[in-house]
Structures are given as C-alpha cells and as structure tokens.
Length: 218
Length: 417
Image (cartoon, rainbow over all chains, first blue to last red; front, side, top):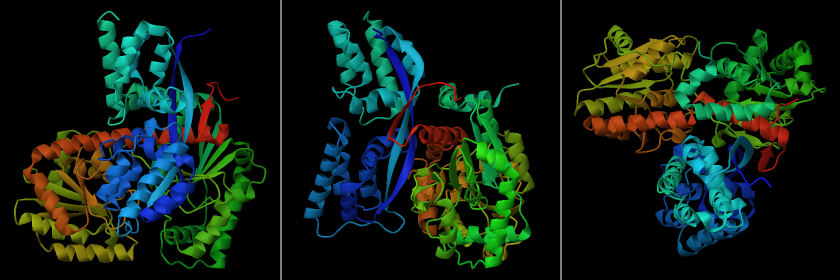
C-alpha cells in the first residue's frame, strides 16, 4: 500500500449568485436558502484572496456588518464564529442565522447598507490537482514546505478540516498514521491556530515546527 | 533570451509560474479562441496581447481573432456600450440590423474555427451575437463583460440579453457589475501587466527627465490624479482638496488626462478645470495622448501620493497602476477601488475634497507612513491584480467548465487529447 503523502494544490474561482442583501434582515433571509458554497467562499475564500487578509474581521459577513451596516456589535459576534469547529456547512449556516436573529431581536432598528454597498452573495468552485510531489518521510517537509504555494497550504491546512473526520490538517492526519512515533510533532502542529493568520504566516509557522522538531533529532 | 514565463517568474516567483503550468497541463493542445473588436487600444486588447502568448507558452493552442465592422456597426456598438453603462441611448432598427449583419458576416468568415474550438471567449457586446449563428458549435462559449452593467438602459440590455443568455457562462469584473442571467456568473477582476510600458521599472533619470519637461519641481511634494476629464472623476474636487492642503504645506498638483478630441463633455470639463485652476503655477494640467504610457508611468513613479477621487468608477485600473508603483492612493469610496484600496492600509477611501485634503496632509506629515503604505500597496497588486492571477483564473474557469459544475472538481493531470 502506498503510504506516501501526495502534495495537492488547488485554485478557486468565484461565482456571483446574483443575491444582494441590503440590510441585516435580508442577509438572514438569503442565508436560509443560499447555495452552501457561499458559506465556504465567504468564510474561507478570503484566505485565498490575499488582499483581504489584513482586514479587521475574519469573514466577509462580519466585514460587511462592520463596513456597510456600521454595526460593530454584530460584526464582532459574526467574526467570532469559527467555521473550523462545525462538522458541516449546514451547521455553520444555522449558527450564522442564530447570531443574526439574536441581533435582530435585540436591536430597535434594522441595520442597513447604502445603495452600492449591498452584501453580494458569491460562491466558489475549487479545482483540486495533484502536484506529483510525494513525501515518503516527514523530515522531507522541512525542505518542501517553504516552497509550497499558498493555495497548497490552504488545501492541506484549511480545506482539510472540512474533508477529514478528525477536522485536522492533512499533515496531522498523515502523521497519525505512523502511530505514536510523531505524537510530539502532531501536538506542536495541533497548537497552531489557523484562524487569525494569513496563509503566508501559516506556512512559516508550520515550517518552523517541522524544522524545530527535526533539528532536535525528531 | 528569457521566455515570457521566465520573465514573469522574476516578478511573481517561480511557484506561481509552476502553479500556472500545472493548471494548464490538462489543457495542453486545447484550442481556445478569444474574439474581440479591436487589435490595438483599450484595456481588452492590452490584456489579450499578453495573455495569448502566455497561454501558447503553456502549451495551449490559443488564438485571438478580431471582428471587422462598418461605421453603422461601430455606431451601434458605441451606443450599446454607453447604454449598458446607464446612458439613455435609443438605437434604431437600422443600427441593430447592422450589428446583426456584421456578426453574421464575421461568423461566416470564422465559422470553421468557431465550430471546432473547445473554448470560445467572446469579449464585450460587439461580437456577442456570434453565438446565435454558430449552431454547429462543439465547445463551450463564454461571454466576458468588461463593462459595468449594474444600471443599464433597459431596452438595450434586453436586446443584448437575448444573445448572451445562450452562453455557457459569463465573466464579470465585479459582483457589483453583474446582471442576473440563467448561466453561471463568474467573477474575475481585471489586471495590469508589470512588463508593459505603463508599468515597467524606470530609472530615476528617466522619471526626472519627464518631470523636468513638464516643469514639475521634484523638491516639492507631488500629488497626482491620472484620469480623463470627466465629471465622475471629480477633477474640480481634487483642485478644491489641493487648495485646502496648500494652506498648510507646500505641494504641487498634477492632473493628467487624455486629450478631449471628440468628446464634447470632456472638452467642457477640461475648460472648467482650467478655469478653476486659474494661473496657479503649482497646478499642472497635462493633456497626454492615449499612447503616452511611458509618460504616465514616469508621472506615477515621480509622485509622492496618487489620488483617484472618483465619484463613480469601474474597476479603476489607474489605481492598480499607482499601487503597483508603491504609491499610497487616496481614492473615492466607490466601485472597484474598494477592492484595491484597503482603508488605512495601503491608502485611504474618501468621500469629499475635505477628506482628501485631510489624508494628504496626514501622509505628507508622515513620510514613514507613505513608505509603509507604498510597500503594502505594491504587495496587494503583486498578490492579486497582475496578469498572472488573471491567467490563473481563466485556466481555473476553463477546467471548471470542462470537468463539471460541482463545487469541487478533482482533476487528474493528463494532457488534453
């Protein structure tokens, strides 16, 4: 059986659904039915659109609430939804709607955006491909990681949490296949919080962990 | 001599080029044809001039064809263009007939190639009716809309929609520009080419040479707006901001735009601008020809801060160009500018002349922030708005169209037969 790790890569393309929310209530209403790919795009897609990596809030819904609705309270609440802990997109959708409904219940008026600043629902298609690079031994990652594309980091560290039963990165799942041998390395990798970071920083952090681990003799 | 891909690798990094090669691998040998209406001039031709050789270097059998037309056809498409951007333009049945006839003639000329191509990209409204005639097509057809159709003059959009509905997908620059259609609406922002005359590196001597020729003093801060003389670009508002700034600090303003040859409103706006500027020696109003790419490049590079105080804007490629040159941009909070200028990060988004003046004064007082924002500005364009990203998205789109409509498409890397 082939136990090597295949380095994959991906590319993402955005598709407008044509749905536009003018206020917080419309946002909730669209969220009930919109394509679930929109949730993926608006929570994770920002990582691959690097220009938005420096924004104050962590997903497009929170950013819109902050910039266009000028509702700091709901922006903060939306920003704290960590998409990585939900087992599927439908659970994430329910939580998102719950947070918005709570805000609609509290507030005396419906926060609204000026024309031209509507929330534009967008979904994505992801093309995944095998780069042909195979890793036979974990130590090889030391040299490979600094040169991986950011989209490859996205695929193995962020996207993986949606694909794997363990909700972990592909690196961790693969290392776990060696039994207890790499338990310490897995522990170090597991401590990296991918949420408040850019892909470039995430690549650096993972590289650092592999370097540290194997420098110390593994 | 370096190949094109090697030249781009020196700018974007070899991993980006490797990524392009891998995406293009399953498309090797595939016939992809782009159709537009002009070989030279305009952003579309500029992009295609570079995209086609890049695709060919990646092993794709890419072609570019330009449709021909007569004066009635161009009258019709010019009106169509204006109408799609919101102007009330009545188009006569005669002009519509010319549009259809010219599309039919071009279809007959290109018939074999259009029918055989695996992917056909049709750019903008001019050749959009080609699909209607191509009943024997084998490949996928995409309509690439480069203009803002968010508030079209409805009768004209209704006419054009009949033609574009039949495409397999359409591509738009921004979600704001989209009109609902029954096929997938892909979003691909435009890009700039770092190797073009307008964007390549220039020496300090060359920059100084241009500025000296225009009698612009390099020892006094330079703020610049590059755009045609159009009310939506608010050149009067820029001069108002300049006058507010100069009360506090020495500064020069450059307003550079294309000559207003056949545009009556452009002439009117230019004369208003000249009158409002008066004989102020620190205001430089430059009328440059449309092909003055190197001059614009030098002007942007020689400026300390770039302004784009638009009241309404499409994507705003002049903003992209300025950011690429490491300049913080102070720009109107509108259109595609909002995708590029991240407020307080690589520039400022403003709504008034007063806001513009405030931000310019702040930056002139803090040269270290100008430098920091300038570095970030360059990086934002490097990561997001160069032609290599544009190409990557075109390749991804083609793969998505060929391999299915699912959210996730896993492809095996084998050359396309």
